[in-house]
Length: 270
Image (cartoon, rainbow, N blue to C red; front, side, top):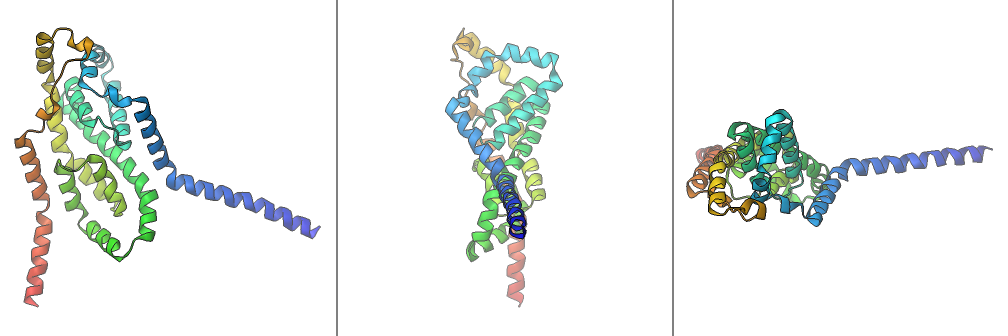
């Protein structure tokens, strides 16, 4: 009887350990796996085909009518969709920012985009840090550990530079800090403030898009239905804007330069 009791007691403990292990795996990897799965599904179904200016122009009247009747709901739907798009690292964010400026106005559209992009980036950041970042921390060698520590020490300057300079892919800047174990607070603050200039540049462009679309329709009647109306989004990133954002990025590196200069001066005196 004693053996039977021991055996049954052991049997009741084993499933608990398996459940605990499954829960830990889901907590660590679940969000990242879900993001990758939804991203793969989206690409396989061709969701990217809907993120075009032709689609926006084709459905402009219906979108404007919905926004006129349900403005708050429209802003919330846009913000939720944009946050999801950023979390999935799905292409089309720039176009949506232009669309927000066009449909909601540059101020509301730009503000909603900044908030939504920050939330979406935070979701991806936490998913990567919990899964890949944790694994990398345990397996990191001396060089990677030293690099990670240096990045964390000056995280605000580095992240502001990466956010302000329109050279690095947005998804990459969302993921890299997670691998370097950057804290949540500096990540959120630098993301929020760092994307404001570029976001409002696109929103301003979108606010003036109506006249461009009207010109396209006048020059090419029926282009909205046919999906052949073309607007060059590259017009947003003019050389002047790129120069201004690069200058802002350089300003964000001033604290690093001052820190290096002080260290050099201190070592010279000793």
